[in-house]
Length: 377
Ligand SMILES: O=C(O)CCC(=O)C(=O)O
Ligand SMILES: [Fe+2]
Image 1 (tube, rainbow, N blue to C red):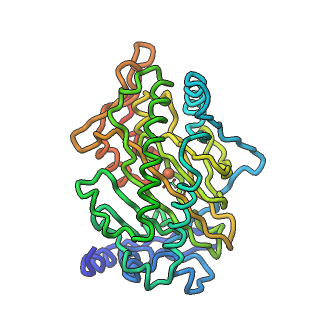
Image 2: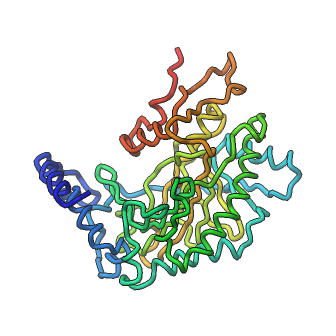
Image 3: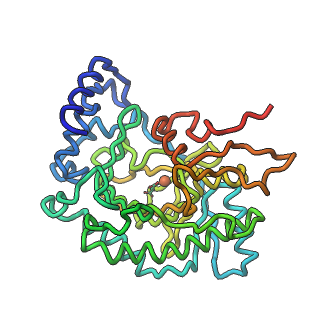
């Protein structure tokens, strides 16, 4: 946004000034407008620079109105799938996990530990460089296939205090990696290559778990990679590392470092921890697969809570979709999963329509996906 537009938007929003009750009293939302976001981006330092400047409170742009509550009592064990198992056993496990919680972790997945460790550590090293080395890469709009920025979300859904290095692999300019820091390039591209192989295998297992051929979704690809760095946060209970959401893809493969902090909501109820387990990778189902499977599979709600004021955290999410997911490519429940007993739960939609809806509705309920739900009489 250019400065004139940002200022105009600022004035407009100021006229509509609102107040909300923050967790610790009433907070003004004046700062949370286009102008504040613009100024924040202009500083080109991301959250990390704010933290380095010595802030002791969470800036308004990143405050959450209510503290995250999670169930300490629930000891959720993420279903585990050993990919060395005979295929029919692996399919059964994947199917059970995708139907019950929408999340599982894989072991013996064929991605070398060094590939994952190296990717996580180059992301950490890049983000922990001095401001002068990092800030030239800062850009909210993609430069070629790469974006590096904090992605604040305007109120009523405040930003997430994390800086993300994002690489698109499905973009017409997907070879334009000039904004991918050289020190990260080899490790992140190797990570992408290795996880793409794994993603294709997982797609096959998920489809077989639905009783349809693995070839039913053309060429699944890891089209978007988001490398998140969550700097330590002075007031962990007043921010969320990642807002609660479902992913808008087929499925996501996620690596998190030993800090953990990922949580999932079980069947729309309690939030429980997904503890990091060395050597495993997490797979979570997204909205596209929920639709394609005609609600056989769940897309799992998840978030990142900040537990420690001292530790920074790194995670890498690789999002998978069918290769065809452009504006004119529609997807809907697979015909073999639509029966008289179980009619289609969704209208066909394009991925772009879903994304547009997500942008418009954000995390509001009803969810972006509900707009496409068929109402059954
Ligand atoms: O940081 C994480 O562990 C989760 C990231 C995530 O959910 C996402 O990028 O969609
Ligand atoms: Fe996610």
